[in-house]
Image (cartoon, rainbow, N blue to C red; front, side):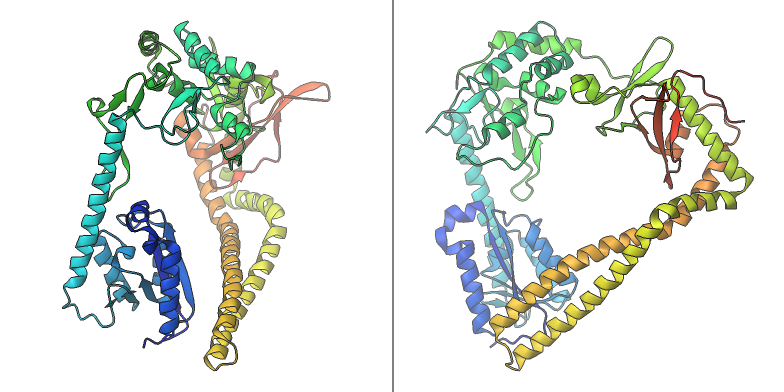
Length: 550
């Protein structure tokens, strides 16, 4: 008879892969495993049980969500016993399974594989049946992987495989899982895209035409139609007609629109490693005339050659010293740079792609932006050089005005949550003692501790967030000192370059031009590294010459 040694958790671990579902039927189902493990825990007086369940995950990988959660709890000292139905539930990788059994031993955790009769507390290391069984389990996984690959290849050779969501332009034939038919709602859009590409139109022009015609993107179309069973997809599209260039490109490069199905393009690295690698083109399995084509093979090939010839090499524009730093104040997207004859300019990418219906231009000229940023850097550098101490106090005063109230609230909440966490620990300990002495039943104990532990988990999560926020506030003074020492070296700079800009600045937010007192004005927010935005409002008149800081 096993006995619980303390109030730590007994982890009941269940796992079921797709292969196990087909290979063993109900005997290995999650419900069966839970029932067996619960009964075993009851018979052997193992209390404070908690289930860790991974369903649909192969035993060849140990990167399973709830298995890793269990390992973290073991390393945190929360678990003293792990019970599985058999050794294969732990895993089907001989070396890794052995490593984790060693980890259990290192942390004083008993491991029991019920059906295999294995108990780490009674195992002296002389029993060779355990490693032999683990090797057999690994060979089983290898054999299952080989059979699945063979079945998939045979299926591909006999007419192709169409899995998942049908490609845009097609729908699945009702009652025929691997057959496609033309979707009359979306196929004309695909044909128009190919026609425009053949006429020499760019991806941008095709995407803009689709947006102007208010054509739903493939993902937005899915959301609008819903699943075949009538259920909705769990995503929402903010801009349903905003086509990405990558979406246009993926459709125009897809051989499926020529009536072919291409299989075996990707493969797992091994039966243990599920990461994908590309197969050589000669290993692909292509099924001709699998469904009605939306474009002829000749036109498809012609278009591919034209797209190759139209691609231009990407060159670095050295004039853009703000690369990756500028963002739109409204839609939060980046600003794109374009080189004009005598100057450069920036404009919101959403506006470029979809026009004013999505966002306004937020246009700003490179020379004007450079002058503003240069003046602001020189201003901060002059203040820091004059007196680093006073400058640091000035920056801290700006920060403190914003955060003093927040910090007091956070400190009060942190104290309250810490007090409640201590109370919960005491209540759980008392509940365990009450159950031990028969004051409350085991069922009542499990119910009480489940509620308390749920509250404890939420409080710990919130307490970590609060502590992090308070630490950030405490680090502010160090960041201010670092920035003060960094910027005071640039008092006499006369021009900006990319290296200096990216050293000092984290990002720049550009606002749309507004009319203030009858004059056009534009605001930008400069966020410096270490300290963020320290200008209350940096507003300038875009059509006036900017005076330099003396």
